[in-house]
Length: 187
Image 1 (cartoon, rainbow, N blue to C red):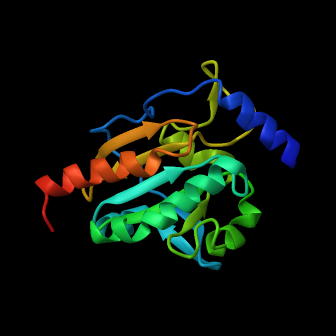
Image 2: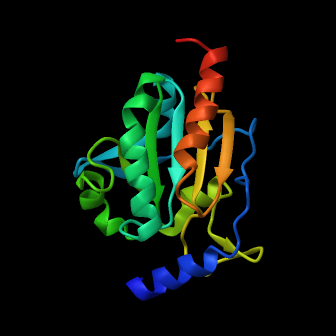
């Protein structure tokens, strides 16, 4: 997909901004494996294995190297140590520009090598989480994910879900949910 098409898609998607993600709190979060990068190094991310270590903060973003997604990755990067202090695994997932994820994962202005990002070719993982990019109640013809964030308990249940195409509050939303859950489930 070319850059103008992605920019146009994201601009149109901003018109449809639900307050909450579709996979609700209490639902079973689908397990998945996906090719991923951490600080430019490839590996396979395994959701089931990550949950065995503690809660998982999973955030979907439409595409690497786009304005909102760059901001969101940077904000998550700045908070990565705080998520780790809560015992959580942080993972970003995208279907957009997956060939650029190695660089995106290591670039200081984005992920900064502080958390991995996974490739979701065809937005299959996003669809399993009911988080494909939609506009006016219809799924976009392109396979991209909405900007949705989930906090998932070790037992696989969704603790919280948040969807908003604005990138600036996902860290706050997920951290507040994680801390509230952690207060009830000390390490």
